[in-house]
Amino acid sequence: MDDDEAIGRSLAGDLTAYEALVTRYSALAHRTAALLGAGDEAEDVVQEAFVKAFRHLSSFRRDAPFRPWLLRIVANETHNLNRSRGRRSELTARLGVTAEVAAPDDPAGTAVATDRRARLLEAVRRLPERERQVLVCRYFLQLSEAETAQVLDWPLGTVKSSTHRGLARLREGVGDELA
Amino acid sequence: MSSHESFDDLEAQLLDLGASLDVPAPPPADVAAAVRARLAAEPTPDTASEPASQTPPSETPPSETPPSETPPEAVPESAPEVVRKRRPARRARRRRWTVVVAVVLAVVAVTAATPQGRAAVTAILRYAGIELRLGGTPTPVITPTTLPGERDVEPGRLGSLVTFPVRTPAALGPPAAATVGDNGRVASMFWPGGIRLDQFDGTMEPFFFKRLGPPYPQDVPLGATTAWWIGGSHPLGYIEREDGTPVPLRQAAPTLIWQSGPVGYRLEGAGTKERAAEIAASLR
Image 1 (cartoon, each protein chain N blue to C red):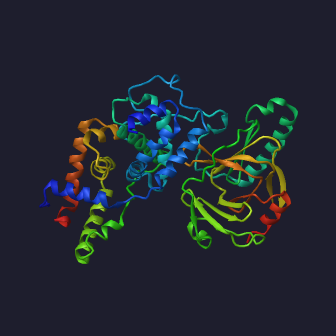
Image 2: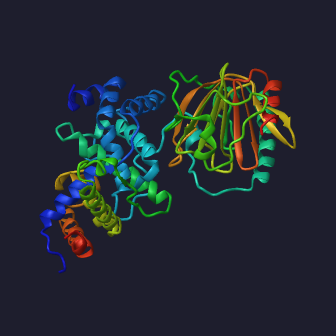
Image 3: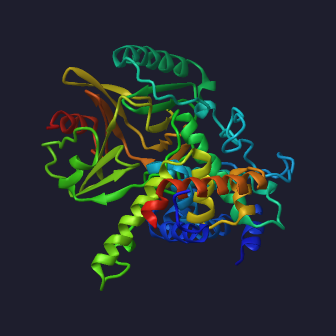
C-alpha cells in the first residue's frame, strides 16, 4: 500500500490504512519534532500532529508528496508547543552511540571524531533560531530546499539565504577548530 | 575569514553529525495504535464540513510572522468539557477544594432533580490532578490505551524516575510491577488482582479526566483530608499537556482519588470503598 492508496482509504474512514501511514512516518516525525525543539515532549507533539493530519486529510492535495505536508504539521505543532510554553525552541538532541563505535579499531580517531561532532553540535545549537532550524531541516533531516520551505512555511529564497548565513556563521565560529 | 575549509566539507560534517544524533522515539506501531485510539474515539473527519483547500492545514507559520491565535483545529468533541485552555498557573489548593465541595453538592442536587442531567456534562470538578466531568451517560471506552510514553520500570527504581516523592501502601506491600508515563509525570504501581495505584503531581493542571454519570462521587474521610470514591466503572482519559487534548485511555474500575501534599493519587481495582480507604491510609 503506497502513500496515495493509504491516504485514499484513510479518507474513506479506514483507520487501519491510516495506522499504516502513521507507522511509516512515525520515526521521521519524532526526529523532526525533537530536532526542531519539542524536547522531551516530542511524543506528545507527534501524536497530536498525526491526529490533526487525519482531520485535515481532505485538504491534502493528492498529487503532492505527503512527507513535507505532514512534517509541516509536526513543525507547526512544535512551534505552538514552544510558544505556549513561552520558551525558545532548543536543539536538545544528543550524540548517539553510533558516534562512539564509528571506528572501533581506532579509539583515538573515534574520540577525535566524537569531539568534533560535539563541538559542531554545540555550534549549531548556538545559532540564531531561524538559521538553526533551516540547517536542521537541510542536513539533520536531509530535506530538500523545497521541502524545507514547505515544512517551515518560508519562501524558498529565505531558505536559501538562511542556509547560507547559517553555514557562514558556523564557519566563522568553529572553522578553526574544525580545520 | 578564519576557516580553511570549503562549504562542502562543512555540509558533509553536518550530514554526518545529523546521522549520529540520537533521537529516541517510541515503537512506530505503538504510536500508530495510540493515534488510532484517539481517532476512533472521535467523529470521523467530515470531508463535507471543511472546504477542500489547497493549502496545508496549519495557518501558523513556524516563524517570521506573528502566529495566528488558534492551532489548526480546536477539538470538536461532543461535550463542552474539553474546550479550555490549560495554563501552568498553580492555584491555591485549599480554595479550590472548597469550591469543589460546593460544586459537588450542587451538581448532585441538580442532577437528582432534573432528567436533562442525563443529556450532557453538567459540571467539571478538578481535584488532585484529576478532572471529573459529571453528568450525562458517558460512552464507554472500547479500545484501551496506555498513558503517553508509558513504560515498564523496576518497581525499586520508580522513585528515582519521577520528580515527586513516590510512596507505597503498606497494606499491599511492594508492587508486582511499575510503570512511568508521560516523561516521568505519572508513576504507576500494580498488584495482582487488577489493583493499580497512580501517583502524579497534583498541583498541576489535571492529568486525568473521568466521565461520570450517576452514581456521583462519594466523599471518604482519609486522615485529615477527604478522598472521593467513584463507585462505578467509568471512562478514564488523559489530558495532554500542550493543549488539553483528551486521550481516552480505558474503562476504569471503581477508583478512590485523593491528594496528599503536592501529590495526587488514584487507586483503582481495590474492590470496595472501605478496602480502598484502608489501602490509601497505609501509604508510607
